[in-house]
Amino acid sequence: MKLKTKEIEGVTYAEIQDGKPVYIEDNGSETAFDAPATRATITRLNGEAKGHREAKEAAEAALKKFEGIEDPAAAIDAIRKVASLKDKDLIDAGKVEEIKQQAIKAVEEKYAPIVQERDGLVNQLHSEKIGGSFARSKYIGDKLAVPSDMVEAMFGKHFTLDNGKIVAKDANGNQIYSKANPGNPADFDEALEAIVGAYAGRDHILKGTGHNGSGKQPGTNGSGGGSKTITRAEFEALDHSARGAKIKEGFKVVDAA
Image (cartoon, one colour):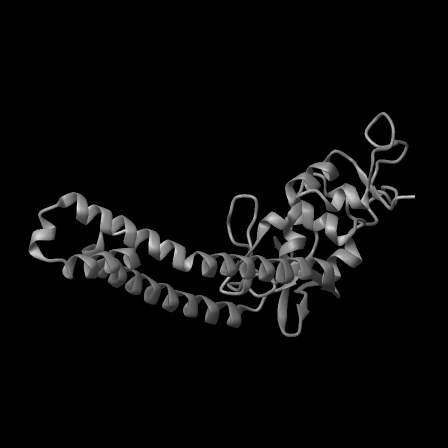
């Protein structure tokens, strides 16, 4: 990363955009660096970090008294059951254990449909938010030579939901932050561009990189032998990891004749 400069009448000046110095990234892209905003963001993040640390320490101290309890709801129900027993019933330890197991089973059966419904809604939200972001991505439409469903199959694993917001992580599991707005998470397209930029086979999926429209090297036909193809129906029947594997193997998705 280096400062972009220009020379006027033999004097070198820093390139300014909207009052901000422009820096050139290692990959050739340009970013206008907002120093005041960055300083304000760092101050804000330091304050937030202190608050999070104090809240974490307070929560850990409060939770120590509950160590060993894995299912709070079942524990509360079991305590109520035991409290209602007569002294003579408590002599039979086997009876107490039996009642505890029955209570736990009842709780699990009661809330199983709710848990199942919750998981289904979470999956639907994940599909709409993340899948929809791939489908609507301007970066994919402008910069990539493969359709959005194939891009999602390759890179969808880098995106998750946290409190309803999309979070992008790199190959090392680190959250991706914006270069244009330091200290803030990257938006979907900026994060996807960073992920694609770090992908070893990016030249095969980027537009205008010297390859033909199908993403193959000039003068080649697929991967050495013949052209590898898979119908769209077969491709869509695969899970995300399998789709990514097909793309990396050089398969091209075609519509059935």
